[in-house]
Image (cartoon, rainbow, N blue to C red):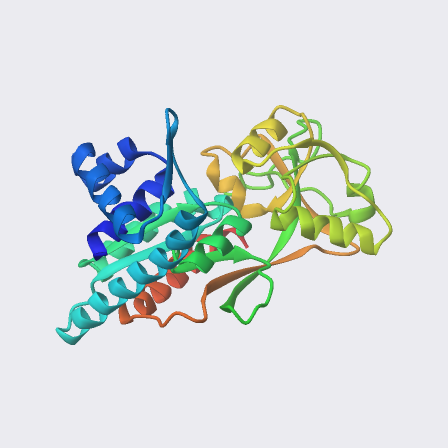
Length: 311
């Protein structure tokens, strides 16, 4: 078994297709198939189940996939550390972002990364907390920005910011208007969480971090959310709110995904307030390279600059 064969197998298993893997790896499909078949012959086990729709790992293949990801990650770490000896911060850094922040910071983060780590390769992944945690576990993601991450010996986490969730509704022209030109989104009087529980809400499905937090706070006051729609895209939630289909409970900076936030009105939630923690998380059992440490500094700086105007 050599590293190239292992890389080929991991890519096919992850993409579920020889065709897609051959494009991603820039290798002819017959050559790719031959290398993986040689690996199967050497290990004396079928690693992939091939069918007309693609290729799926067998039980043995899943086991090799788990080990293969770790092996390839360690090889990448070795290359990065050897590069650091030469004084160059290089290598690959994979960063996971939640959908509510992805559009807000993707461009400034990429720009800052190219300026401060020009020899490194950045990979951005968007997804909810469950997918990000799995990516950290298996080694696909080096650093993730998560909401309300659960403490675990397998991860190291730093709280970057504590954010208040607010009620976002369609603007009612008959109610409060912006008090000055700089205030594009009308703000009205606070609303209690008990009152929020009576409103038709558009929430992400479980196990979304916001959904779990909202239900937990309502449960503490013996209330349940009136969920009119479950939608797992935050942009779609806000689009539905804009059409008057319901209300959302999200951080106020999610409105930055809209060029014109004036169709929305924002109300603070009280009794109690709903506070969400934004955390930077990395796997505790994998050593950080100097490139990753610098990447953490860049992510933190860009993130705080991006959400500051919305506080």
